[in-house]
Length: 502
Image (cartoon, rainbow, N blue to C red):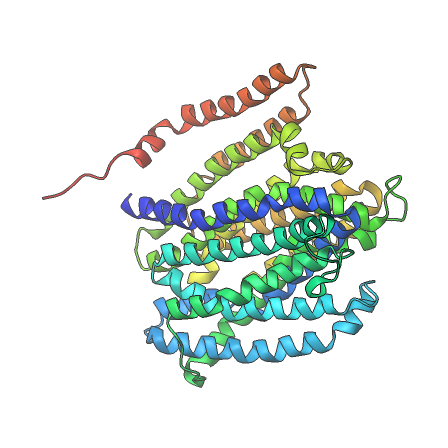
């Protein structure tokens, strides 16, 4: 059980950066919905969905490939690092330059006429992210979790500082006559522009520190290393593209698919802003999944040579489901006050009913990440492409079919449907090629029960705020009691201190 506790400890450290840092970032939704228009929120939702999609293109699976070839291919990790970073830097220059030059065309095509600078900044943000990807991965591989966490948190704090300065600080100084409108090129009519600019500045400023702590690389492209890595990574690229299609395209396409005047008094872009803002509430689940992923990916690869690794993978999966289903209920039953707390302007709360569905979608994404270990450690990454391609097709089909009919819920259904199918396919193929003794029946039971409790708690209304709060949160205790009754012996094993041997 020491390995299990090691993973839990690493997840906790990475959670410090992922959950604490992103929670601070998440709190910016309060600022955005308070100070920006719904149209600006719609632009924010759409452009950052595009950034999420293009991030996969710029890194093309090289983080996972770096882990694989640094741990299990009898290669010098330094040579792997040099070649990987050199390859990624070269491709980033090519892709970033191409996107920079295409910015005017993109702005017209995506209905942002005269705002090509948005996509030039996007090209720079993507380039900075890409050249940081492998140094951050190296820190994870070397178990330098505290340095990793510190760099991530500092990056987020910089981002927050620039956001607050540009969105709140400068307007305040202008209103009080401290500075004039136009100071340093400041424009009061900008909104999403300052979110992008803050991101750009924050990412650029941490590059020297991260490169220094990870170890500066020697530019060298070794064909002996790059060729097999390329073969391994290409399926991961397509898996990533299909994956972000599943995760982000509902937000990117929403304003273009939603019929005009579907929601009274809202343009399609404003409705997209409401949809994206409610998506942000569901990202609380994704924070946990991201922290788990940072710790689990290198951990899974290192444990792959152990004959007992399938049993360990199964235990990790079960603990993951228990924790995340409890979290889903805790968020869902408290949306009555969480929603208005984070979504400040009137009108955003009309999309709250999709949040439990989105939470379940993210939970299924986390389960898929657990399941996907089989094709990564058996070098069968070709299956990742086909599985996620099916998910992408389902995502796009549901968006185009159901968003025009059901609006917000149509977008939410695209998320949960595609991840369910991906989990099912990954599980079936995984048990065929690399059997892992998952507690499948119990896992499904917890997923169904928790999803039902989540929506039951969301719609529960006793016409009294205090009684509502007590009744809704008692459902968390009820589910916790169910877990304790069924998992008591296993939980005691997890919590039992490690015995010392002499």
